[in-house]
Amino acid sequence: MEENSRGSFGGSIGFVLAAAGSAVGLGNIWRFPYLAARDGGGLFLVVYLVLAITFGFALLTSEIAIGRKTKQSPLTAYKKLSEKFGFVGFLACLIPFMIMPYYSVIGGWVVKYFIAFLTGHGEEAAEDGFFTGFITHQTEPIIMMVVFLFACALIIYMGVDKGIEKSSRIIMPILLVLVIGIAVFSLTIKHTNDAGQTVTGLEGLKVYVVPSLEGVGIKEFFFVLTDALGQLFFSLSIAMGIMIAYGSYVPDDANLVKSINQIEIFDTAVAFLAGVMIIPAVFVFNGTDGMSAGPSLMFVTLPKIFVAMGKVGNVIGTMFFAMVLFAAVTSGMSVLEAVVSSFIDKFHMARESATIVETIAALVIGVIVCFGYNILYFEVTLPNGSVAQILDILDYISNLVLMPIVAIATCILVGWVIKPETVIEETTRNGEKFGRRGLYIAMIKFIAPVLLIVLFLISVGII
Image 1: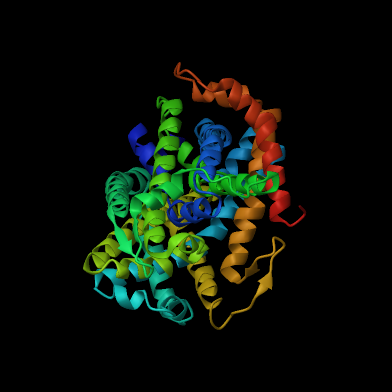
Image 2 (image 1 turned 120 degrees about the vertical axis):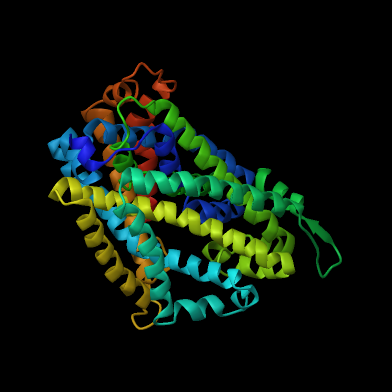
């Protein structure tokens, strides 16, 4: 009865699509490609892939199993497993609560660019100063943020099966078709530069997938490792309560081992294809220098590239930002659900009430984030050396401080308190075979905690 009142997925396919939709978000679409470009292309890909099937697998399995075993949201699940770890549930709920406002702001930026290209104003969006002019405006970013937040809230308001699962079954196939279509197109483009050299998308693909060890020593490799490790949090939606919430809606007879493998494959494939979409196109028009554009890649560099493609660029730009918008919505609604489900379980609120309360909170904080680029603008240097505004501060605290803490605590809880066998038994409760048993135990007890502690110490500027 408890499960029915909370809602549940209709089956494994709905769960996999929803979980993959959560994982495939802005972190995959824009963060993965620029990290890959910065960190030696294929070298980053190899390191990321190894970490995904070891470190990522261990944490993803643990969180989904915790969710299904406890049938609770992140806020209450940890305490149900161990009274002493109740604080971890609070942090795991606080993270998506902090993320949702600024994620909605960035989602609003995507809405703005999608509308610009859809209405034939792609050239304006590519002009110098367009992005800065937009985010420093006092009202327009708020309007776009509200549009994005409302779309996510509406899906969550409708419930697990009629909202999350149903929308994921529609959005994810469209998203995948768009990703593959744009990736294939990116490989076919070519451009003759000022020096008279014709550069092709396939040359850009080579830069992306062939490992470059030039200038890579132990220190440089270590930075690639920590970049890939940090990216896994974004890519797999781990350590932010989402997979615990989604796991709590999985039917007991579902094959968790198979579902987790499918989520890993789906997410890694889309992350890789995001690079195929972006890096060859950037390389063709801007060379290797353009690939180091960092976070501004999507909102500053890419619009210019779409315009440089000529008439077809407006169509490709529209398709690209539609795809990014779909990805942002599927991730945004999962972040929202992690908080809403926590309110439902902890305070016994109705889904509708919990959704409204969290949406209002996200809206208020989101407005403050928008004002952080105009009337509330300031700059502060963070412990990791980066210069930050309000959005960056929320991102730093949630992603680089709290998420490693939650992940470390999860490893300690599963590895040493309730023991790995608890997760393995939950995952194989229907007789499924747990293929990476030895790897899982070693990762959750020893390797993952060490990697996470190092990542945390780097994030707070200690090393």
